[in-house]
Structure formats: structure tokens, C-alpha cells
Image (cartoon, rainbow over all chains, first blue to last red):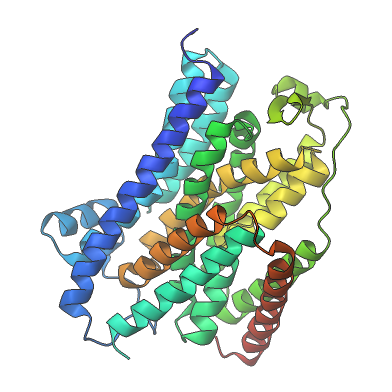
Length: 123
Length: 278
């Protein structure tokens, strides 16, 4: 499609990445501050590996922890937004290559997206 | 030490790592894991998780600027991301079954190799060549803005570059680093991309590669929010500042010092790994 030149795709991609990283950083900063105010006096819990509690290891759990405003859940939600930023860029690439009717690259990008979804879905 | 104190010190260390990494072009991610494990005694699994998060933040932040300036080759990046994400999934799967001390030793070797590469980095302007079969099929050629107008280039060595990218992805997934050094090597030496194109396209791909590993590690409980927070914010702020003061800074000297630090950290990681103290 004539409207989606490489230049326009690159601009949109750049903005998408910038907004994703900034938004994630703000969420992590604010909820991290709240976490330190509330729990800062305690000894750190990450020196010895115990694994994270189950609700902080998968997407639905993190979202529900963030919704009840648990500060660790909120930070994890910000980190999830960060992880989602490159994924969103790949999703946008599928659409952009589709608009350009570049089916080879739609297929290539879908393979990458599939691998990313496999990783995030867990088992 | 309580959590506030430790968080502030970790944030300051990460800030410095991100600053030097951006200023010298060596990347800050590679020193985060050794810093967290050797200096703060943090479990290497949490360190790898936090480092991966910081890698996504800095590479996506930098890629946003490069993509707009038209240096990155998006087709080359997209195609090679198949190799790096597949490699990342393999690397994480291997890492989950390796003893931690073995991971520490591999990390040490990669650190020393990164330091070695930074000592012998030469810029070169490749002549216009013929594309190879795959490059033609995949339309990988491109152009980038230079002082004397738009420079066109062709791409070679696609199978070798693809293989090296798989390796880079594996190391990234296994160690929680960006593997920028191996990625640039693949695109620079194997595929003969212009230097500016290979560094920026590598950066463009690192976020997606790290996201693939981060998903797995998140599910395994390696990503601790309280630790990832100061690391991510510190490295991100440091690298933004480092990219800004680029002009006028004594980059050669800093690069030399930073590469020596990286090499020494490599020796210490190997030593601790062999001693079983990781």
C-alpha cells in the first residue's frame, strides 16, 4: 500500500519503542518507590535464590497482583510492559509488511512472533 | 544492609555500568551479572534475570533513535531475529539444566572474548559487492545516510551470518546479556554490512532476543522485581546519559580501562566458577 513507506514504518516503530520503554520505566520507578517506602527497612530477599512466588511468574498472576496494588506486583507489571515492548514492535512489523503486501516478510515475522509467544506462554 | 541501602548502591553501580557501556560502545549489560554476583553476593539466577531486563530497556531505547535515523536494516534484522530468538530459547533451555558454576565459567570466557574484541576493532568501508543467493531472494540490500548522500550496499554470507546469530542468541539466553559483540561480528565480518548499519541493526534485534529469554526466566521465577527495579532504572539512565556526552569525552582511554575491567571480571568469574563459589 502506497501509504506505508519504509520511512513511515521506521518512524512509527521508533515512537512505539520510545513510548513502551518510557511508560515501563515510569511504572517501575513509581511502584519501586512505593515498595521501598513500605518494605525498604527489611533485609533484601534476593541474595539467595528461592524462585519468585507463583503469582509473579505468569502474565495473569502479575496483572491481578498489580490490580490489587501490591507493590511487587506493580513493579513486575512494569517489567512485563517492558518485555512486551519488543513484542509489540514485532506485531506491528507483521501488520506493516502486510500493508506492503510483502508476504515473505509477513511469514518471517510471524515465525519470530510464534517463538516469542511460545516463550511468554510458559508451560 | 537493608533493602533501601542495597537498592541505592545497586542503582549507582548500574548507572555507572550503563554510562560506560554506552560511552565506549561495549554495552553495559555484560558487567551487570558479574557486578551483582561478585560484589553483592546475589544468586546468579536473579542476576541473569535482572540483567536481561536492563538489556531490553537500553536496546529498545537506543533502537528507537537509530530506526528513525534510517541506519538500521529492518529486513536484515527481522530475518536474523528468527536465528537469535530460536537461539535464545535453546540457550535458556540449556542454562536451566547446567550447574551454576559452569554458567559462571562460560560467562567468564565470554567476558574475556568481549574485552579482546574491543581491543582490535577496526572500522572498514566495504566495497560494493555482489549479493549472495539468499540476500537476493530476501531483498536484504539497503542504503544508509552518509556525509556524501545515501550509501547503497549489498549483503553477503547469509548462511554463516545466520549461524553466528543463532550462537549469539544462545549466549544471550544462557547468560542474560545482549551479545552485541557476537552480533556485530556476524554482520560485520560474515555479512559485510557497513559498520554503522551492523551496530544499529544489532541493537534493534537485541530487545527481541532478550524478550524471548525473559519470558522463560519470568516463568521460572528468575526475575525478582525488587532487584530488577534498581538495575533497569540505573542502566537505562546511565546509558541515556552516556549517549549524550559522546562528543568530547576521552572515549579511547575509557574504552581501554573498561575493557580491562571486563577482562578482569572474566578472570574472576572463571575462578569463582571453578572454585564452586557461585
